[in-house]
Length: 279
Image 1 (cartoon, rainbow, N blue to C red):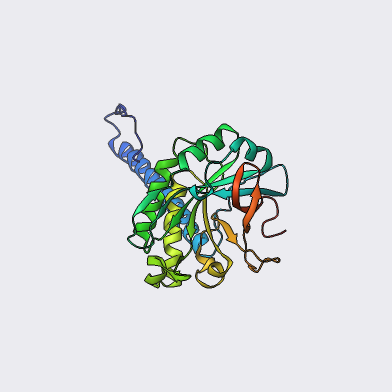
Image 2 (image 1 turned 120 degrees about the horizontal axis):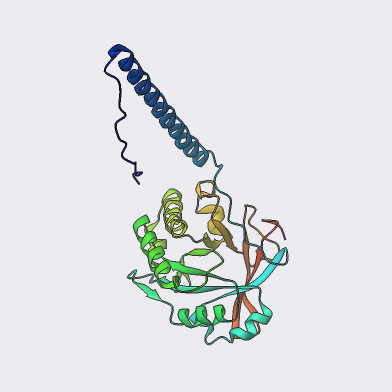
């Protein structure tokens, strides 16, 4: 954005001695040029430092999210969980992640979760810290940004204090992996780039970015070193002992858990707020 400058009245100068006045004006001009060069140099160095920091892995750390305990416990839900009694949930869980939308794994259409608004409204009403997610089937950066835009548009009237997450997973078709994301056979670089594209849009909107995937996908399908460091990592791993050795912030440890207020089985999670990657 261009800065506003105040108009200056031209100072009065004596007609003589003319050469001395010219020297003063020349000195002022030289001083202005030096100041301009210094400013441009500092700005260039700042940009260079930022670029170097980005490529050397020294990026912005995750935004601070704290609970009154080292490991918080919570659930993630969608319309598959039916009608939820959020008052009961508030007494049982420290947090909740709510699905807001999803992309179809065949035609690729974007849909809103039918329980999203009710879940968000009631969770806010009962003072439950909330994060949200979008089930992705994006196969390029443009589609990932489209998913982020849809998600952001549908949460703008709610209090979202936890990460806004891209749910990156392959669909199951007839008992095996399939669907448009799996069938696209993207490279690691392409998968990683579309996640960054989603998270960039979330970050620019003022929310905390995150990505959800299985430990298998994080281990084998992505270039984790190329994901921005401020992205919260949410790993699905249902083994007794965590099999993912990389950095993570949230662990979905069961897809058949229980929580007061939810009548069916529900996904259950640990959120590590003080010691990341530790249980």
